[in-house]
Image (cartoon, rainbow, N blue to C red; front, side, top):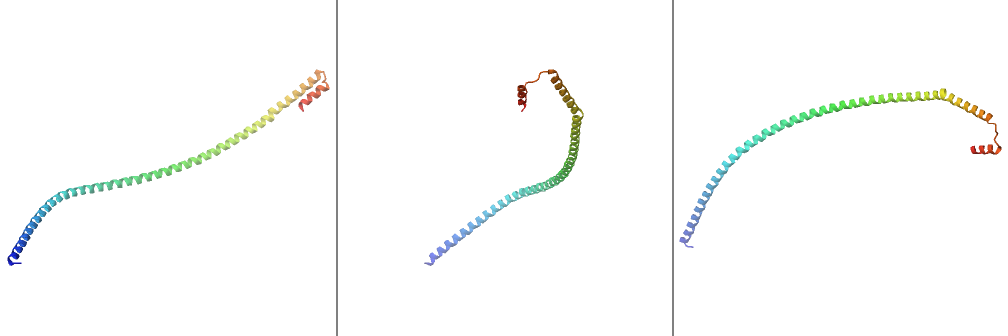
Length: 168
């Protein structure tokens, strides 16, 4: 290659390098402008995000307080419920024992009443019904005797046998 051609090639390379450097400078300036615009937008968003985070933190603290209050109240309600259930259990136990005692008393009273009723029935049978039966039997015997005496006719052997066979 000739020195002149080499010189032209070098000049062209330097010119291309210079254009590339200018282009790089322009791109760097554009990137600087874009980063500044992005920084401004991020600053605005960061302010909003910071206020949102503060609001969220306040809400979280309030929620924690409310959850703590609800938990405390729930524990109190559970304690009260447990105490009431214990009282109800004692009351039911006492009512059951009293009912058992009263049932035993009623059972004793019924047993006593039934035994007295049996005694009364036995006394009634001995004292009233037995004499009535005896009187009735004596009256039946007297009636049979009187009817036998006053009837006069004697049964024939066939008739007596026939009457006895009916009862055999």
